[in-house]
Image 1: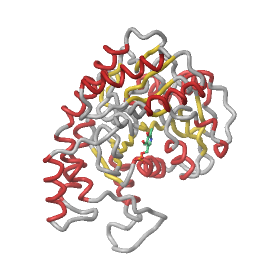
Image 2: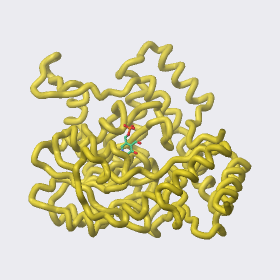
Image 3: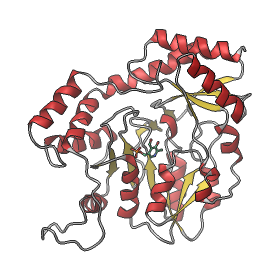
Length: 364
Ligand SMILES: Cc1ncc(COP(=O)(O)O)c(C=O)c1O
C-alpha cells in the first residue's frame, strides 16, 4: 500500500529525541523548546514564535491572545480543515464563511470585502494545501477596515507570497506540526508574531495565565497548551532538514505533473504567479467528477494499493456551523479534488505507479 502521507524520521530525529528523553527534561521546559521557538521564528522571519500542543490550540490561543471573543466575527474560507472554524467557536466568536479563489483555492479577497460587518474583528486566511493566500490584497483590506489578520498556516511551512514567507504577514500566524505536515513534531503547533505584547500574552495564557511575579496566582482563565521538550527535539531535527524536506515536495509535484500532464480533464495544484507553493499535499483535480464518482475513484485507487483523500467538505455543509452561504466556487471545487500520496520517502518509481493506476481507472 502506498500511503497518503508518512513522516520522514532519520538518525537526527532519533538522536535529538533520545537526547531529550535522557536529559530528563521531558515536559515543557528544556533546551529544545527554546531552540525550536528561536529557529522557527527565524525560519518565518518573525521576532517571536510560541510553541504549543497542536495547530488547533494555536489558532484558539491566537484568537484569545488578540482578545477576540463573543460578539466578534472572524472571516474564514469555506474550503479548509474544520479546525479553522472550531477554534473560532471555541473562542466564543462567530466564523463567517466566504468563498475561495477559483485558481489557487485560497480565500477570495473580493468575498472577504463583501462579508465585512461592524462586528468583524479579524480575517483568517488559510494557506491551503501549501499555497499561500493573497496576503497583499488581504492586508490592504484589513488596513482599510482596521481588522486583525491571523494566518492559518497549518499546511504551508515555508510557502511564500510575493517573495515573503508565510507566518510573518499578519498580526500573527499559526502552524500545525501533525505527523502528515511538511515539518512534524508528532502533535504540535506554533504561533509566530512580531508583536511583543501578543507574544507575552500568548505565553502567559499558554501556561494557565499564571502571574510572572507571583507563582500560582492567576487573574483570568488560561490553558495548558504547552509543547513538550521531546516534541520540540523532533521539531529541531526536522527544521535542520527543512530545505531537503521542502525540495522533495517540489520534486514530487514535478514527477506527478510529468506523468499526468496529458490526461484529459486532470489538473494538479495551480500556483499563482506571485506565490511559492510548499506542496503540503499534491492535489489532483478532475473536471468530470461529481461526489459519487470521485468517491468511487478513491475506492478503486485504494483497491490498487494507493491511498488518497477527498478535498475537505466545505464548512458550510456542516449542520452544526449552521451557515447558508453562497459560495459557488467552493461548491464546484470540492467534489472534483483529491489529495495524492505526498511524503519525503516517496520514490519516483512509486509516483509512476500511482499515476499509471490513475490513468487506468480514468480510462475505464
Ligand atoms: C488549515 C488547518 N488548520 C488547522 C489545523 C489544525 O492543526 P492540528 O491538527 O495540529 O490541531 C489543520 C490540521 O491539519 C489544518 O489543516
